[in-house]
Image (cartoon, rainbow, N blue to C red; front, side):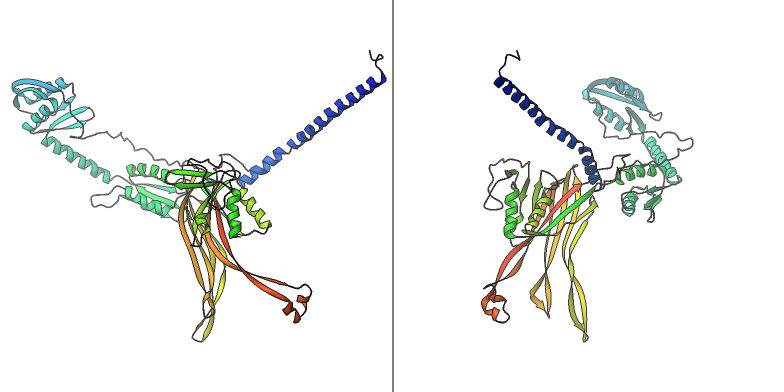
Length: 515
């Protein structure tokens, strides 16, 4: 068959074979290259894990074990529940007719009619007569007791019927038991407080100590500041009640990493930021409206697409506060949904383009419900004259940020934010010393873990001086003044503060840092 082919057919066969081999190599080699690249992924994951660990962890709770020796020969206390009028009596209707019958016998017959367990004191004496027709059991029972000067108490499921003298004897016995309890020896335990403030715990726990007849606590709770420990002296019952309370109160709280980006941008750049990131969330009553990411608008706020809207699940949702107005500070939000470093990358890119200036990028870690403070500024010298002597004092001109986080519902945070910005006011200077104008705002916001809120309204006026003129001639000394001119332009700059809280996860028990 091969010999039967002409030269032209053989040539076509060779070309086809070479094309097939070349195609196989073309699709195989990139796969090999990609296969080699995959080998780098474990190293990448290793460094990524190390970067996560470098942030730190939240403390993990540990179990506190405190032993209390048992009383020698102690018996379990008798559980007695006495509620004379709180537990309901049987109410079924009964009919009964008896004449000159002993009270104890009548009460036993009445108990059998209601299938009720009773216990009658030996002091119950006397006889009585009864003639009732379809009356409620509880009314008949209480009427018999009152007629014969008796009373009752519940003890579990049993009704104890006794005389007034029996009741007084029980009360006296209970008072004697209470007196014996007051002379019970005190136990002493030292409990180290790991996460809470020992002084605050002392103040709260003092209220749970048993008091004597004069209202003074039996025992004491002292604080050792050096070891942050509680020295508790109390009776056994109080000690058994205080230790679980300490276990509940002295719990580790999560740590929160507060990341802040403080930037200066022109008014136009700030508006462009809102449009570029896209996505808007408004809250009007109980209705949420959204603009989807990538939306364009002539203003920062724009118009929502619909009443229900679409949750922005990519990019960011930006709501610059108060439309970047001129009336002091205000708070908006940036709900970052895609990636945790999108904001930092965007701001860094804009700084390289010269559209904004990143003043600082501080980060600080604090624990739940504890204030974190970030300050950025300088000290300005002030000259004062006192008793013909000139003195120099320095006053701080700061941009101050206070954030107090509180973790609610696992991944949701409530932030109490206090921000203030000082500015030198040369227009109202006194004796050459500028006045200090302060803008301050305080607010509370609720964010998800990793979301960002933005604070705006910190605006200032910037004056730029530009020079123009005839080339070469404007450089001539003295004469060049006639060939050039200067122009002053005033621009408004906004200081934007982006705040991102991140909850640090707990360290897994037995987990070790990888080298």
